Image (cartoon, rainbow, N blue to C red; front, side, top):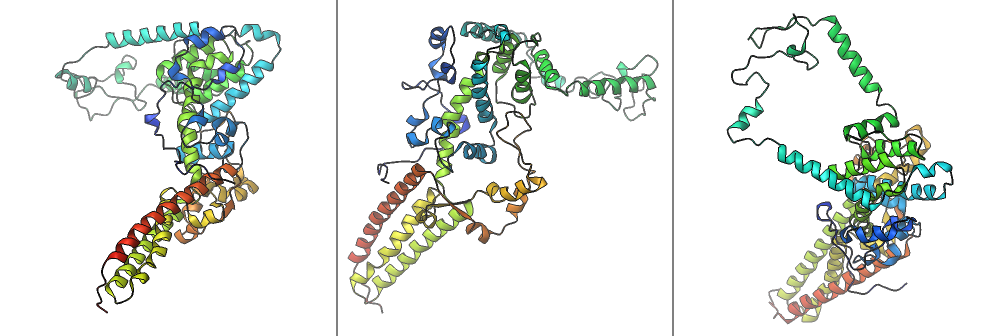
Amino acid sequence: MGLLPLTYRRPAYVDKENISLSDEPNAGQNILSNFPTQDSEAGLEKTEPSLRPVNSGSIAGIPSALSFDKIIEGGTCPPCTVRDIMNYLIYVERSAENLQFFLWYRDYMKHFEQAKTWDLALAPEWTPAMEEEIIQKIQKEQAEKARNKPSYKVGDVTVEIFKGTDFEKGSTPVLSSSRGRSTSDLPEGTRTGSNNPFGTPPETPRGYHQETFSSEYVGSSMATTYRTQASDAFATAGIKPPFTIQPFRKEIDRVIATYIMDDAPRQLNLSDKEQKAVLQALAHTTHPSAFRIIITPIESALRRQAHPNFIRWSICNGNPARVFFARGLGVALILLSTTIAIVLALSKAGRGYRALAAIGWVLGISTLIAAYKGMCVVLHGLHHRHIRPWELFMAEEEDGEEGKAKRSFDSFGSGNSYEDEPWVVRYQQRNVIRKIFDREVWIQEPMLRQIQDTIAVQSMLCAVVLSAILTAIFVAVPGGDLF
């Protein structure tokens, strides 16, 4: 297989805070464009160019064979498959909820399009005009709240902080019950008028304990189903609950409870405006177009931030311990070769012997440059890579009861935290030497091997040029004839 151009550069790391959604002339099509809608032309006209996801194949450093669409469609080999990018988002980026929601949305669109039931008429399309109207309404409400928010003077800040506490000026200390309810809320005859903050409050009537306990028990038991959780989300946003006879309403409730509502196990990083807008749309319809306001930035983040970072990370064929060892080896070779060149220059040996140091310089500089890009030249020579830490113990965990690890491809489930997985402690207990010479596996993806070959050739060429310069300098220096 040939090489990429020698001017190739791996994808630059994209920070979450620096994701640029600026309009691109060759912007890719949104996933919603594949769904037949009645107002598709109007939607394209009103869609802001800045929210159109770019085709990841046009991102610098990513060949078309490793594009985002190619990976999602299953057209790549390990370690560049959908499972690999999911593991990367879980264990490295710690933001797999975007991809999980994106995969669910693609399947949901197909199911909705293939459904031929009579109740589809109850789920009309959520048009861009309706979306724009809701957004303007939410923005207006937020502006009114900000305008009506009381402004405090500098001297009033301290007063506001201690308001309602025992330190409030001119206030009578209010004793609090064990459940956080002030004694002023207790029935008549149970309050205390003592100003001693260390006094023991009178015993709370029995009815108060029963009332508080029963209300807390009912409140916790009401949030046990997806429907009640979705209803709570609608109520919190001040939205009327939707019709339950709409198609796929149960699935939408699970999506709200898993991805959209506050404190959801896989809560998406949505602004308050986006959350209220999508809840308003889902209260009106279960049509896939109801997710338009959130699926567009989610897809853009996957294409512009998660995918380039994943390709950059996949190019590294060694674990951190092996890469650090390779860097140290490169520096050691460079220092050793430089020492040999200095000794030969100070001796009576002929000038030609000084050129022998170029061998060490070429090996050391090429090793150091490759290690800087996360590659070990020894592993690359075999086209191998280290097995990821979570892959080392995966087979053992799947055989036992502990192997019921989180199924990251399940659309609905628990959160993506992995700190409690057994492999974390077991890998931390491995010594450094064992990590350096950890288990290896062959890289199956041809394009990834081609990228690594190109980086290896670039490293070698740079090493040859720098070694030639150093050799010319040492050969030209007059001999010391000291020994």
